[in-house]
Length: 429
Image 1 (cartoon, rainbow, N blue to C red):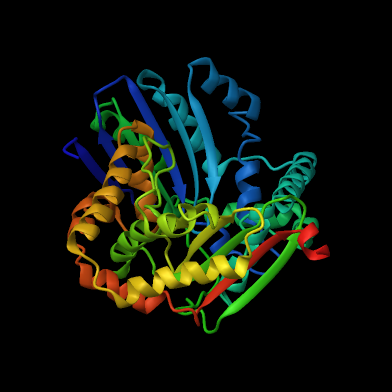
Image 2 (image 1 turned 90 degrees about the horizontal axis):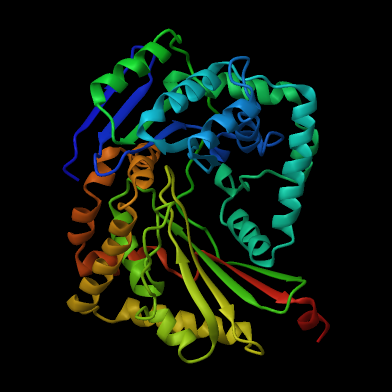
């Protein structure tokens, strides 16, 4: 991570991060907004994702079809994502075409056109997207488990929204959301690749410095620190596979416990990837739950999910059962393995292996210019750039004692949500 790096903040609050990487004539340009499902209230769930869709409809200067053609013509790729804490838009393209991305994003920050017919078209698209998700057994289970893990915090809401709210949201709701959050003071530009920083910095200033400083209105959010009691969800539906998902509370990414939790995840189920654009994979065959559940043929697969968020979220363990295995027996085997971890001193070499696996998975993703630019902005959404820059050192500093303390603090069976999904045939039986 020795490449040239500069950062600057404009008078209107816009933050700019530039990293020069001259290995290939490619550049990746991201604009991040500090708005996601965390910023939505009842009646407005799904607004952030919907606004993201509408941002591809265009501006007077850049109609939607022109944006798409301009990126495609130079062999570039572009997309956008809405998450719990943020919304982001990116373009990866030849370095000598960066000005296309700069112009598009600067214009649609403030000048997007929201037309009624396009608004209604996207309503149908998003409702169809939600229907597809609702028909996916594992996605249905995950939505129910996460919702049950929170009483007050908006993290309980599915990013795509609810059927009720998606049917009742109006065009002016989207426009207010856009006008409030799509502001320089709420945005961050991250660019990595083959360019000269001072030249690009001046171009960014020319595009954005006339935008005024704005005050962003946000709902009040009270973090939930614990899952207060054990909860169980039993769900039946189509398909022929059975799943278990167990959700425990996880710490905020800026919490000192997060890095020890990352190693705990690596120990239990193999390391979770925070990278968006791959770059390799790490087998979880050495993990405790793989050996206990998959090798002994209780399960077909097991995985863990730890996410970097502003507030405490959930750490989930997901198990796909072998046919005819009783879910309660598989859950018991999982609990026995976790209990063994809690009551047995973990050997230093075991921790070292888990650290190496988590570090390798992180490092593989940095091979991509797109992921380099992604990480600059992503880490700023829930912590700061130093969180990313010191990631590997923080992992290597994790002590076995801290891993055990985190396991004892968070993985208590009385403070979790357990979700079971079984085929309809099992219910009939």
